Length: 180
Image 1 (tube, rainbow, N blue to C red):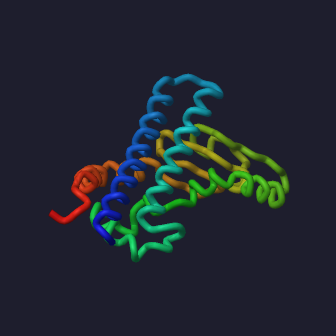
Image 2: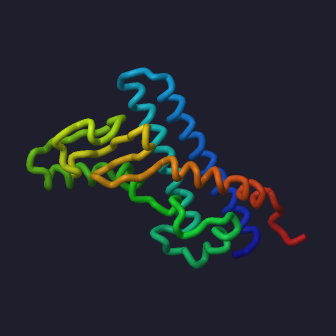
């Protein structure tokens, strides 16, 4: 990868990682307020959605859309210490949030009872009798897991990974884009 292109990728990944950390802080601050109600739920899920979108942007930068640029982006991943096992690679949960229209259509056509639980803060087990396909967006603050259709994604693991690589990103992104 050309050095100038690499530096610009590093700067963009850094920006998206900073967005991830801002969104995580927003989740924590909103939950600390301890208020019940729709505003708290909306603010938490707004921040979760922003976190997932920024993480998907990082994934696209590091591997390309659906991994299509994986080989070409190896130098970028190596420059900041990212392995293919990184939680940053995962985009399924973001896809659930982004393509909610398709999920609703599928739920409606596949569900016999048409039960639905969405935008819930707490463990998925707090509502009894739901099939996985009837659980849309759950966030469990104790485990930091998001659950959608039975799939689980841990936000803290993502934030930990970003916290681990952000020093390298800051160092690399600050370097000149030409050979000295």
